Length: 250
Ligand SMILES: NC(=O)c1ccc[n+]([C@@H]2O[C@H](COP(=O)([O-])OP(=O)(O)OC[C@H]3O[C@@H](n4cnc5c(N)ncnc54)[C@H](OP(=O)(O)O)[C@@H]3O)[C@@H](O)[C@H]2O)c1
Image (cartoon, rainbow, N blue to C red; front, side):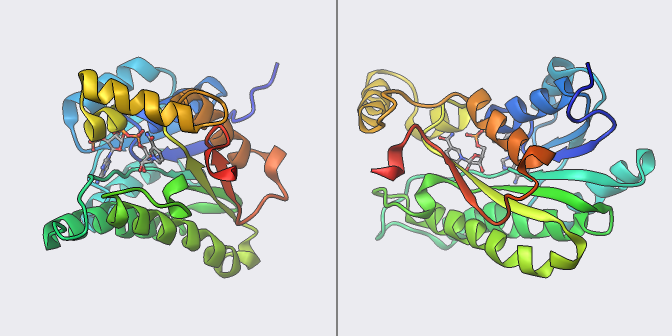
């Protein structure tokens, strides 16, 4: 049986953990040649070993333009074009208004907004006409969370990139969509809440707010990413696809 991404070249930034790792595994299982990035070498090496198949790991900080150039140089050494870019690297910390520092602002915007922007822009010379771009936004793009304003603002910005880039890329028939996960069980979530009883209470509280009655799994987000990347979504363009158990639909 033919696989959906056979002979396709897929970029997954932040592909060493959580949502990115689940997506990289799913693309690889569907036959793609996958390039993943992450800043930590040992985590990158472990992810490459875990994913297997036609996988290449490039150690890169996506907020640094020189690192993004190195990523696409590595792609160009093996392939003449890219089919899918999943610009997923990102994260944030909880800091309430009143305690926000310039450093917090710069770090969050550089990773989530600057990184996403230049990951996509620098991919364009290699991205084939008719290709697909998926940007990781978040339910926080349209909802408020205490102490999460800077992160949420970055995700609203990312969502709006998709609205505008479909116009800039119209003539090339490149689709751009945003995926907005709700609370998803990843290392990134652990970093946010920590471990222990308080963290467990927070998780349970959040699960109770979600109509599906639980937080999401990275594999569930990955399935929606593969849908947006595939020809099954050939007329889906510029949307924000919420994969959140219904959290922001009520
Ligand atoms: N988990 C959730 O509840 C949730 C909800 C909505 C949206 N999201 C979004 O989903 C995306 C993935 O998050 P996750 O929960 O899967 O987190 P995660 O498990 O912490 O994974 C984050 C990945 O991004 C990489 N990364 C972070 N900053 C990077 C940078 N500057 N350059 C290159 N790689 C970078 C990390 O590796 P290194 O640290 O080694 O660089 C790791 O591979 C993020 O954009 C996040 O904002 C998550």
